[in-house]
Image (cartoon, rainbow, N blue to C red; front, side, top):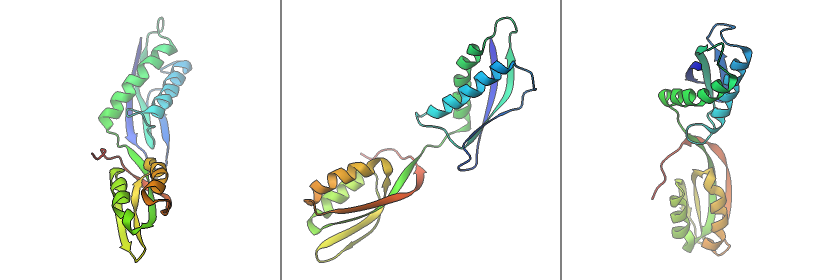
Length: 177
């Protein structure tokens, strides 16, 4: 009862999601256009990997309907399938936020702290040691910052000092074992 074709293209970083039409004006009743557009935006909020798809342009390139039988619900039901197929063909990349960090810790806590950081997928920067403490720097996925903050006192007997700040997004990597 519904026919649609969608094209997905990457957008500029930070541009958000845009919806456009290449079909003839009036090719569909307004309610059908609205059903497609609303469903595109709703589908992009959860994306093919469960995270929002951002910075893309979705264009309606083909449409059709049966004047006697089609309803807006037909278009709401079809749109997610067509959009997810278009996203698969276009290819999506999943990025996650990272935090840069510095951690100051007692000499004997270096091994357990760096082991925990490594388990969280940390990319280590500089490690410098002094007479009483180590200073370790690096970047780790933001989703592990709170976990690290919570386990640091136990790993350092309460003597560790943690500092972190957002440092950008990176492609999602497979978890390390």
